[in-house]
Image (cartoon, rainbow, N blue to C red; front, top):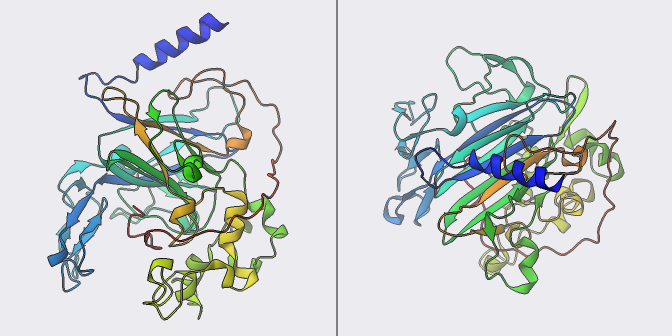
Amino acid sequence: MRKLVILCLVFAAAFLVPVDGAVQHTIQWQNHCPYPVYVDITGGLQYTVPANNSPSKKDTAYGACSCLFNASGKAFGCNPTTRCDESVCGPHREYKCDKGTPLVDGGGFRLDADLRPGAQITHTSAVGEKWQGAFWGRTGCTGNDNNLNCGWQTCYAYTDGKGKTQCGGAGVTPPATKGEINFDQGGHDTYDVSIVDGFNVPMAIEIVPGTGKTGSMPPSYKKFDCTLAGTKTDLLPLFNKTGLNYAKLAKISGGKMMGMWSACSFASPPNTVDPLKDQYCCINPWGSKQEFKNNGNKKCDPTTWPKDMQTAQFFHDYLIGSYSYAYDDDASTFQCMNANANTLTSYMVTFCGAREGERINLPGSDDHTHIPVLNPGPVETPVPVQTPVSAGRYHPGTSDSPNF
């Protein structure tokens, strides 16, 4: 059996080498949910607007499918690095985002429900060096690739008014569990699972063994060095044990709870704006610990929010290392380095990992195998001791800006 597994690994690895010999990163996807997951993915090379032409007066990096803004705050064009044929921007939508590299997978793909032999529960995406992107899983979808209804997460990126599997660069529609990977910036990758936009499906990001190596992070941060980010546990069945405000935070679709808002995403449009929005979203004067004095001795601190809106604590209890509010960097940003010049990092993104059987073959290919799991039931994770979260560098609490 051992020889057979080794042969399978060598055979699978052969398919991961690009035909032209170019070295690439890959993202390997797998779905173990009892329902299909439609992945929405957007990303490309970052484009930086220099400080003298940026509204922030600092060098501003934009991700894929973004409008670029000048010092006066007016859009002057699209991010030129990524082609998003269905995206336009500008005050009069006069700029077409039709330049640059095509979107990975056209911006979306389907992973079948993990219910039967032969289901297409895996998928592989190849991305170039210095690629940065975000992704999330749409659930509860009905229809087909060209007329797909995913409720509040439907991608209306096209001109025919119908939802699509390929989202064409459309951004996240909260509440949604969002993953983020930034390759090769400053000599390493950074990655995280963000709950700033809420939660709808369990997501975990991990390095494919043999493709990465740890860096020089301080000992206190080693748990973020090439380790698993996110969660394999479905948080929705645990909601009623939290004391959080169901009426405000539960996202109901089709008569069922299909997601939950974060405090910030709840308090932002299209919901009724909550008077505590600035605190929940860490908007000035509630800023980082480093800016404490400049902000009138106010800082973003989730423990000061009303108890029934302390979503950041709930997410940290169950998603060790999740990115749950705008200044949550010190407890959320994972790092990993390429194994070597010829072996670039690859990642496995797993939905509903609690239902995954034991792996008997290295993850990292579309044909990796598991020991079957028969009638897997709900899995709950004991609540760990809450670790105080210190603030780090600024991460915007909005979907329109990359969290890197």
